[in-house]
Length: 210
Image: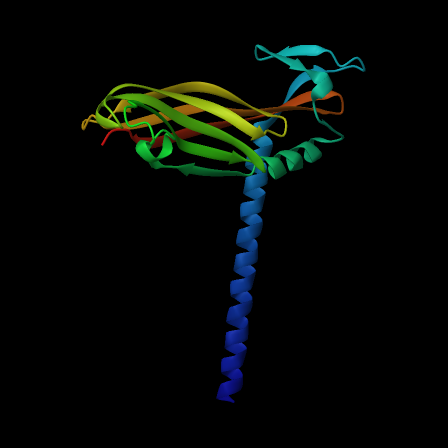
């Protein structure tokens, strides 16, 4: 009798755990979709059959190259599928990333310190270029700059850099870099132009001098 009650209680507990997990997943997916829909907006511009070049937010858009969808939901699902992003930032040893180890007299280097993976094969990258006072990445950092690139299979996305900066830490050897911008995509839904914008921030560190 006791064993039967124990099994019943354990079965009930397992059922409740599974029910709570199911509700949590459903709630998370609903919130994710709702947040994504907020980032997909209509420009209010209707494009006729000639599909001309139009201007949106100061940017020239060739509408003949835009993906087309029958509904807003299709567009959101497309964005959800291709904008899956993984973010990585690094503390990079510039000496091992510059690709110029064989040249002992070099005083310059370049390194990627952060990246967002967009879709299957595209990346927004934060890079740092620099020069050091001594050869082979020795001494102190005497000049530096940060910049971003968007490379790979972009799936109709674009990258708009808003800010990009770098500074040398107090030790004179390490460079911190930060960049902000927006990932942007335009498409047609029932003849109207819609667009997706998502703000990104990237940051990382390069150990430039040894």
